[in-house]
Image (cartoon, rainbow, N blue to C red; front, side, top):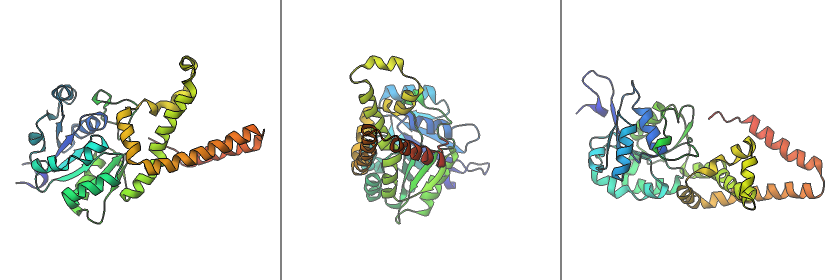
Length: 293
């Protein structure tokens, strides 16, 4: 058997199984199945309807509801489901996965997932989180360039196998991601601030802006649109994320509340310099660390 799917011409061809053809899984399949990529892509969908839809949009991929056929002979399996589904799928996967296969994921909370799946798979599991997405969901929103220029955070541990980390790096690099490594705990602390807190804040901002009069949205411009865009994400998935990382999210909410209270008091007291200082500090922090993706 050739190493990692090496074909007869000598070029390296790796077999990847993607579980969950939503926005992330579908975009990953499109990115890895582009002409010239050395990846053979198989995709698993839970429902027949989802498999048929995915097959129509992923013509270069093998798509099936048969988990055994998707996982057969794969070099790496990528779990692109909800955090809870990822955390609890280990035993089902173990039944069908090749003994040498690497397992990774795309979940946005890492500590619980890494702890659970390392118990099942040991150092073959490498946690990953591509910092890319959309307010839209489902495979209809998938696109091959979703990960171009985005950061993918990998969360290896002392238990991680070098070979598993190598193929995981190769996979996410092939999508166009830039790689960063940190511990699962530091990952959750970081994304609690820069991903989970902004989603919670955007949702609360929609309530504050429109709860009394939803028709005000008809007057809104780009400021409202840009600051609330992520609130359009699927509430079921985001409820899981906020609960799974709730301790870090609550710390961020407390800091947000303190900042809002400081701004509110400055306005109440007519302290223009205080208001301007908050706005200026925010502008400087944001401009010093521009977001490119």
